[in-house]
Amino acid sequence: MNQIVVAGHLCLDVFPTLPSSHQDFMALLTPGRLVAVGPLRFATGGAVSNTGLACVRFGAPVRLMALTGDDLLGTETRRRLEAAGGDSRSIAVRRDVTTSYTIVLEPPGFDRIFLHHTGANDQFDASAISWADAMSADLFHFGYPPLMAKMYAQEGDALLEIIQKAHGAGLVTSMDMALPDPLAPAGQAPWETILRRVLPLTDFFLPSIEESLYMLNPSLYRQRRREAGSGNLVDVVSPADVSAIAHRCLDFGTAVVLIKCGHRGLYLRTAGRDRLVPVARRLGLPLEAWTDRELWQPCFHVETVVGTTGAGDSAIAGFLCAAARSLSAGQALRYAAAAGSYNVTQADSLSGLVDWSTMTERLAQGWPLAPFSIAEAGWTFHSHQQWWTGPADARPDRA
Image (cartoon, rainbow, N blue to C red; front, side, top):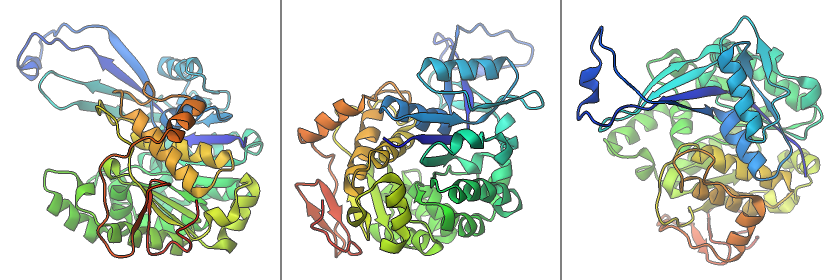
């Protein structure tokens, strides 16, 4: 099995236990008042934790790469990664930065409140990566550049340097995103320009539909956001919207686009043979099964959705681990959907996940799909594979 590097954003989430005896907890937050709370809970967060540890759960050889401070929170972050089976030897530790953390307040009857310190993530660049360790891998995945200030500064120079180094070493490169705050510097960054520079060297591009619309078609993003109102944007985007965004990404030069569409599943679009040859050669992929694909995989049925924290990251891990096992594009898509479906059965990002053999057995038994259909012309459902093929799929009969 090919080795995977998961690099990028990492933080420590801190959860104070808040009292449930008050109907209006927020009214207690007045200056000078002492509010009694319970014990703290800790959890690692960010792409390196969510995607990296999911890959570990799925049996992949994984090296984690991020930046933390030489402080108490950094020590606890690394300790928790190691306790979960993660290899944190390549995580950089520096005295001149502070470890990123998020205080998550969950007052009864209110939406969660996040107090976030970007910390070391804003200082992350190519110098924080152990390139000697990275070169021993085959697949290099980078997560959450919109949450890391250097990655979008100067039209993405630092991000481009990282992807260039990994690509230049012959690694298969992969990148996912995060939705930035439109009013923050990350939300004002020239994302189309950044992606035009980076995607030609990125083999797997794995954004959500919200992220890709925001970055590559902001006017359509705003229109769909208005149409959704207080609802979910994924409910108002059309397959044509998703296909058009994926086509732009392929035009920019990426080889494979996997777009996460929440409870509506996952969309996959792949490039032609010439762009995929080096990717297939490095990972041992069946080239024809990855060439010119357009697939939409619905989510699998779960009895109760408990939470969606890290569901997209789990789906990415399922996809990367399938590619690292040299499976077909369709199989990688199914494992991505399976991983995301297992994730939502628990509130946190990892507890719902199972090992690879258990997931494989569940898929082989014919896991029922969640309700989903596509009414647009050119889309066909294949009951045996349990996916839809789109009008751009060159050979919809392929597995």
